[in-house]
Image (cartoon, rainbow, N blue to C red; front, side, top):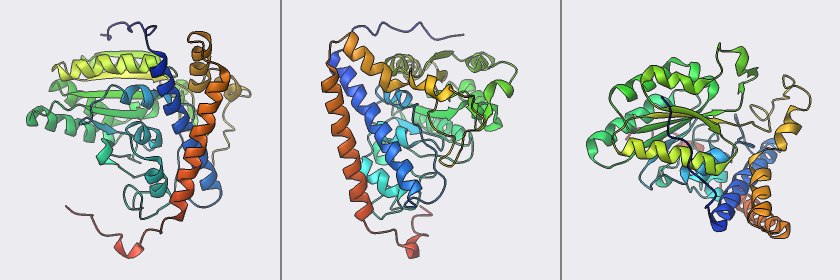
Length: 328
């Protein structure tokens, strides 16, 4: 079973394309600044960057309502930003500052921003899939019309918790959209070496739910696919699986030397990454001059660096208050 064919994106306005480009730049420059802050020793703990995968959260979050719930794996900075969380507050969280979205308690691997519909990262691979399914179960009874969106890497597709979430969501027609961000590596191992078939979207058929594989480097394609899945969920049609193909342009984590990647692979991936492709479309199809796109890039880079600088000046989290908010 598959979702309907992608809708025509040719009528997307220039304003929307520019809005997507700004969002892509916001996540890209945020992650690049995080990488530097980690290298400088300002950020402690594990950090996983989404550089190269920005189109997936940008396209997906564009079709969600303010009351929907988003759950991400540990590579979730971009999802939080796409949900609307302020860069300065997210920087502050990663920097363990009092002004962070969780007052510096969550760091990179465990933060959440529920005021912006982002219900957190999870460092246990695939463990958030049952949580997102539980939120969808609650939505079915509270009449809110809310749907859950759960993103994870393709390595998580082999986790039992994910399969249990698929089965439960499908059995009870729950309003949840599962988004697999397939960057072709399960941590440091090529995914093709981990499974018999790398067509992971086909697994949806075992749970009688729609599934499709899409181009995850195009925010418009992601938008259209997730939009169909969201509408199906809101109408009572149950869950869907969207496998979004992409490539990360950095390591699995910040200290990853990437010695397992073939020579030239990253360079080739840079030719088709989301920002390069959207800039090309804006120039070739919408007639936007490169100078205007460069200006947008420079403005957002300055905004992101200023947000990071402000976050660095905020007071550190008070260790004596670490046990606050542990229990409701």
